[in-house]
Amino acid sequence: MKFITRSATLFYLSIILTACQSQSVPPIVPAVEAPRSVTHRMNIIGEVEPIYFPPLKAPIAARIDTGAEQSSIDADNIKYFERDGEKWVSFDVINRETKEKYTFKKKLVRHTNIKRIHVTEKRPVVEMNVKFGNETFKADFSLAQRDKFEYQALVGRNILTGRAIVDTSLSNTLR
Image (cartoon, rainbow, N blue to C red; front, side, top):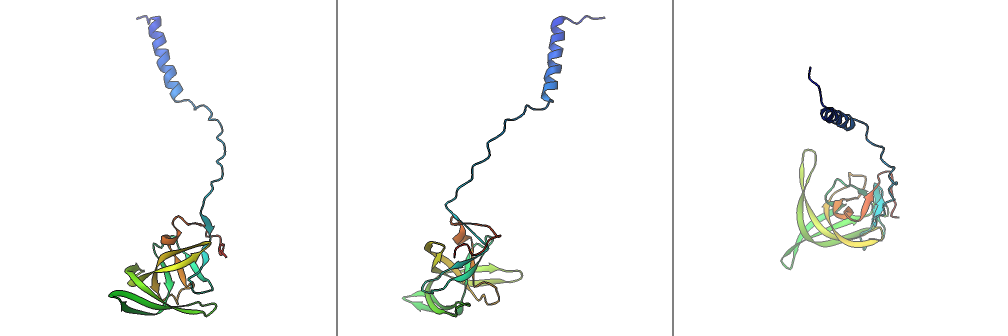
């Protein structure tokens, strides 16, 4: 029978203890301070908000859609024409609530393809002056006949990004 030396015994015990320690329960982590509330410079808005299209005086109800890349407005009587060698579009916007009507004449920015369930629709895009909340700015809108939609305008990510956080449990926070 071989005798194990004292140093060998200590060596084996240290290996066993090391193995046991690596499988042991980690020490209790000290409580972390609750995160401070995050402040944003952006508005928290709801699923439906008013948007103004000057010179129209009354706002139009807009569906807020974070899934839409492009914003859209209900436009009637869309007509293309040329001015100084450039393509332009004239169209009517009629506020459904107040019946206020205005004919816009805007330079055509581009056309965009809107993909729907079974159809791709080519729409003109124009730059509109808008008032959204306390901010007035220019933004691209595709022109569409939205008479079958509940809301006359759709606000997409081209307006929302950097301006608003959307809480779908809210509506009309910008009035």
